[in-house]
Amino acid sequence: MVRCAFCGKLVPRYKAIVIKRGFHLDKATMQSVDKRFVSQVEHKMYVCPSCARFRGIVQIGKSRKSRTPQKRRG
Image 1 (cartoon, helix red, strand yellow):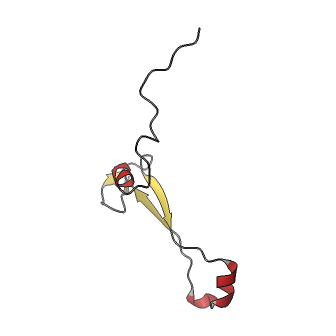
Image 2: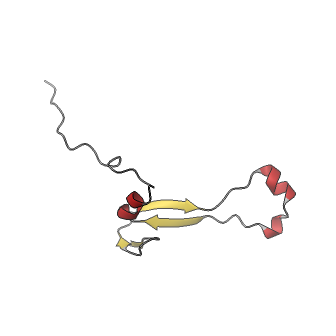
């Protein structure tokens, strides 16, 4: 069980959606900035499906298979 980063609800790990938050600097920026003062830390966040749909991280209905039965061949 993991905790949702937005609402705090406990969610099974297989249902949670993983988001990596952080920032990336290109080479030109890294050369102009002192590396001692820059931390490029990525945070791994777990989000419950309802918060992911509400915040637009996952589109509604894209992760589900269609409910209509497929035609049988033969």
